[in-house]
Image 1 (cartoon, helix red, strand yellow):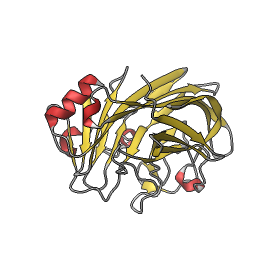
Image 2: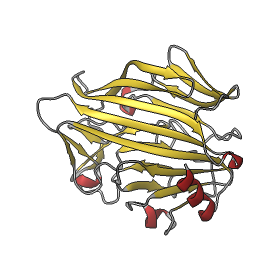
Image 3: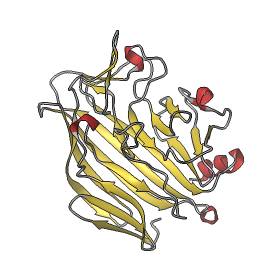
Image 4: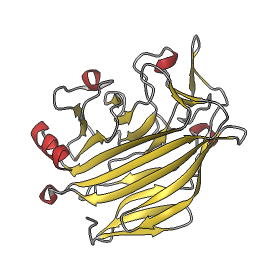
Length: 285
């Protein structure tokens, strides 16, 4: 049930969702990013109910990491991730292959979120994909924990006459780099940080697993991620930088002929949670 304390405010570039009058999140739907960052709509900042920022955009280590959104390293030969493209035999290379996710309009807007339509364009402006994106915020059922829930769903539809291959750097030979899909870049300043599931802990143990839920924690906040309706491997980073994503093409390319839907629910909580409380919140979401 929607909280009476939620409200949505829109301007010409972004929408904000407010919780009791304070900004809970901002969604930039008309980004100003340069083409090398593969411009795309994204959430930033995202905050806990206590006000701690849990997202980061354009950090110095990876300027193409844009808060929370959908980014794919290679869709039909186009870089929708930003930065360099992994080329077999060469490694990360500037290729001039960057795409753009363009906002077309909002199908609906309510106090707790929105439904957005986008198109994914190649470097020459050709439309490869259409997307419907649904983003909502709601209180967590266990309200005494001070947690809230971000519900993020996207449906990608192929607009071309043939199949569109979704590929990651890992499918081209870069081991462990299966990134591509929903991706959440967390603040690099959050240290010490940890990542764990119900049965394992640490980047190397969690990266590439298909755990029911994954928690990314710091002293000030904890994020608990769950997939709904799918079980893709999780792309996990904590050592170089903090980030969690859903890997659409971990070992093999995903061939898109029609439509593909993914939904990720993220529980945003203040403080560092232990495994038992994280599991309880994940179960009761």
